[in-house]
Length: 282
Image 1 (cartoon, rainbow, N blue to C red):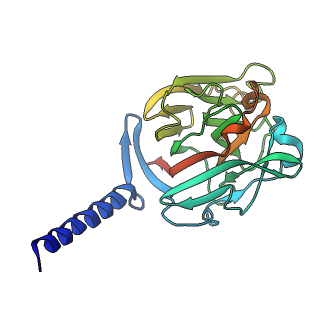
Image 2 (spheres, rainbow, N blue to C red):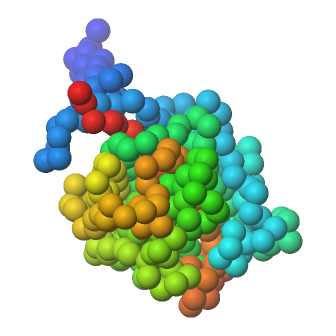
Image 3 (tube, one colour):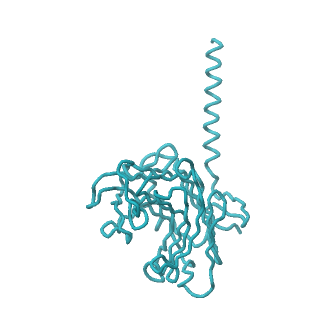
């Protein structure tokens, strides 16, 4: 055996070990506990996207119910289901793709994934590591809706926006609250904004910590928005019922399309590295 062969074997071993170590670092242990300034949180649900193909059907479903009416926002895309052209997992990433591909009377297709019925929670810490698309017309979002709508239709039962971004303002991340009293239709909705100039070139962790008295929104553990339970009624705080997660990439719409849609930039990709859900440790 030559010295060159021995060196190649040695280097191959190092490469294999490095890859295995990286994978182990990415994979949290079941029920692991993390500590933050707000307490200890125990992992209860996660998807590390360490498989290939369609998103795990035990954890994710496709929401297509609003395609015919533009989801209330005059959105320009048609959301598909079980189509790897719009949502697929490979190389440790979930990719949601918006592309020019006429369907359902719309010019674009994309995907809207939900955990409803497969991941529904009352309170917790929600971490989503993602890299955003950018370009006129894009509107990626990480957010939550009520599972049971016990207080009535939108916005009475609430909406929690962990991350929203529009392509014409690519450096700005927005976290919001929508309730019966506070919503964008009335012009009373409450939100916070943070400047993230590399949101579309690098991955960041978008986090919600939701507790009984308030919820807080972060980027890379930098806190920038708090919505407080005023202790009055569900009209101000409907966030005492279970909610589920949504990941989607919209095109156009009342907000995302305010300055038009640039067809020359398609396709657009929304990359998600992991989704982790924690609840307060006893």
